Image 1 (tube, one colour):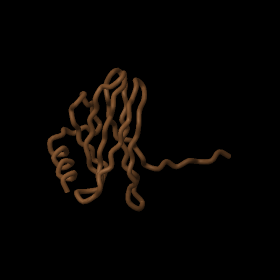
Image 2: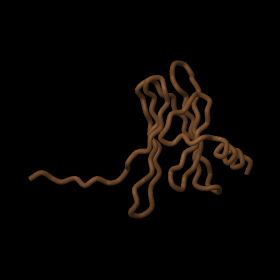
Image 3: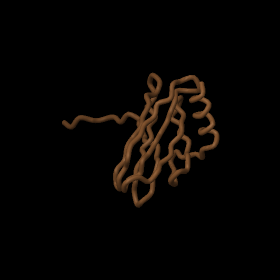
Length: 115
């Protein structure tokens, strides 16, 4: 129960980091449909050590993702949508010495076969 309290407290104190830039040691919140969480990064050995924790609602077990991004690298976190709905996804990238977060359009695209 203690870990859920900490995750909830971080969500309440963190700013909205979705589709935004994050500063080192500044927490941000993530909203991926039913999944909510927090993200922050620290500078480590020439890279940005990114830590993201999400959970499926207040009762879901939290899951933590960690990665060290060098300049020009990115990662994506996605969760499935409901039946007939697109998934929710977030891209986290390092560019120009900044850490950027952007929602990813996961709407299925129709592909037409050439004749």
